[in-house]
Length: 266
Length: 281
Image (cartoon, rainbow over all chains, first blue to last red; front, side, top):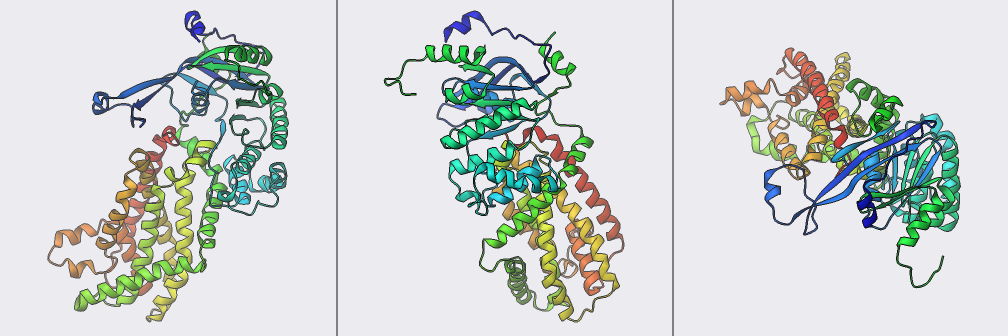
């Protein structure tokens, strides 16, 4: 993507008629990596600087955009383009080397991976997740059945989460995190492990959150998921924004840029 | 208009920026149900994982008291503190609460990576939940400790109610220690390797199993230093309340109140300062 480098960063167009929820201002993220593959600890320390093989990887190189209420934003780009880094920066888990992220509230991040508390049952994870999100005990009790039903885990809800498959775990985590409206929710590939049926239902839920004044970021390699849920798409490559706009246009340009797979099965 | 101005105009906050100390405390208070439930569930799941269940919570410190009490009883022979059995049981059980808070507290952030990385809530609740869990387990062990004390001829009296303020102060102190340990472990993970050795050292040097005044009689300066050592003060106060040992200083209550509140507040502030750091790798 040499094009973007020649043109400089994409200009940010601010829509003053809508309420901004997340503002990302010229965010740079740099990882220090040993070229052996081991990540350097700490950012200062003269010892580290002298170490041979210490490399700086510029995962994000000046990303800016504004996300609004009632918006679901798809984030696309090839592996290693900086999508997950951007999501972690929005949640505050990765400190920007320069620039800043502003948000109305601290977003919740749904990623692939471990259960919340793996030694506890799904049931108890629902209660704890709900309480951690700030619900009262009564509210958690009221939405418990809904969460279980949405995750379709009625038969397994009393088993420890460490016994769940990655799809089951992702379903439960999504159901907990998506139980709250008016929130910023970031979904980083978390739905890709779910089955077709769950994906349809979760996509419907994402649209619902969006329509209820929520803001959702969806990182996915499934263009059909992005098309069916997102009102806007951001395309990242090598740590910079390549395009930001209407889903169909951005996805078309993105697919155009990539070498065609041998078989066109979609 | 710059993006930062746009953010400020719409009331957006910088993500990850830690809130003011008092709003942080208020937020944490708002999640007290979370901390309490986490403590209860953790305790139950640790119990359910074993065949003997809840009995283990009682057995662990009891067996410690039995083993260490027997060995140190033989080693000390004539220099054993008077009323040795009750002395050891009270010492070991109270110390267990402290060492558990320190060791599990140290892992409260690093051991909950998935939770910390996915949900937004004040991280302070995690070490506090650990201390609550240790407190609950400690209260359960009282079922063993108090009858043992009675068995060795100390009848319960009204003064046993003094245990309530004592345990309260001890909990504050332990929470402060757990908070400090939790943050330090985030910076230096290797700490979890050293902590077991460190707690062992404290176990052998806090007068859990021996009488400081007798064993260290040749080192009056060290004995004097024990008067300022909170864990020792707690043990001595507990022994006084339960078994009316003569070695007791009223000032200990004053010292202990001071150090406990001080440690707790220092722990809160120390933990809060690094709030932005938790969950990052």
